[in-house]
Length: 113
Image (tube, rainbow, N blue to C red; front, side, top):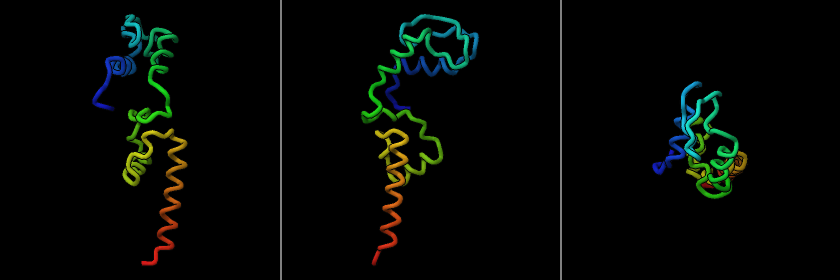
């Protein structure tokens, strides 16, 4: 998570963590409602769409900053190649990782030192 977590994001996270039957607040409109489904975080579809559309274009740098980087494969990629995947979609990241790994193997084969 970034240090600059917005109030909307904090509310969204707390709504996701709340159990079914609890009263929660919509991160967009502020309506207080009863959570009736485990995955519910918004009072209606319009608020849900507003939240995710306001997040921005997934091709912009920084979109995946909150992406789950705890996954072991992602941690290895970050350790090997830094944060090159920060602005790539997961599929693009896999392609880039494969190309870089192939290049690394080629360089090791032709190393004449």
